[in-house]
Length: 350
Image (cartoon, rainbow, N blue to C red):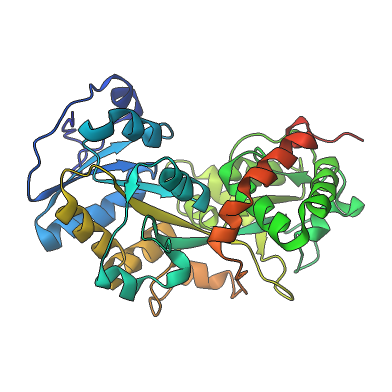
């Protein structure tokens, strides 16, 4: 059941309410679309407000940090979900493999979103891209270029911070290493990075930048948009100090390029409002929405020709790795197994 929350125009349901919300069969209604979202409310509210203003279609949103795909699966034919907004190819492809999606057929979407950012069968559609880069201390790291391979160099011993090796952001990066180098070389590399860690993997991407600011490590893995999130954080102004203490290094710009992943959307298999769902997906791929994504979220648009924000442009241009997202998805299982095999999350072994 969807509940209205007066504080939020889009009707965002908190994780606490989500846990207690009863499963109900909604009456299909034209003029509204039901959204399950892993993306935080502040990131999508500007987009949904613009969508409603343009189309008149009401948006009902349930937000949670996890469990939404499983909820759709459990709800089955009675699910009220029309679309699922999420991040990372692993989660998008996982939703398809779980059988909770249906293909989207839209000439508008196909024209707006390049084929490399769409599932060949139409089950998932990329909406933005983000690069997984290196945050480096301005004070303690002199070099202005780096490679992922270099993270295993002993010169970084005790100087690297990262979140869990099993987090989807890292698994996707590690899967790209498997795809490029093979499982054996990827395992050796992962063990080398593990032994260069300053501490056991913990926290999120922002936590790693905080650790650099505090002198606990010199470099960390992170997604590009977190720099914008920290610099624009008025509620926790100390995050601006964290961000200003680091510089962004785009790895492997001289060879294959920097690992890039996506945020995206799937249409639920039993969507009660399929026409409104397709309209929402088309809108999110439009120039207007892509511009909002770029300015509000500091992400890279997937629609060609849409300019990145001034802040993102200030980080410099980079060469993206052209490895297909399908190839990354295929190697995620191997990457995850290697993380456990080398004891990555146990921290340095020597």
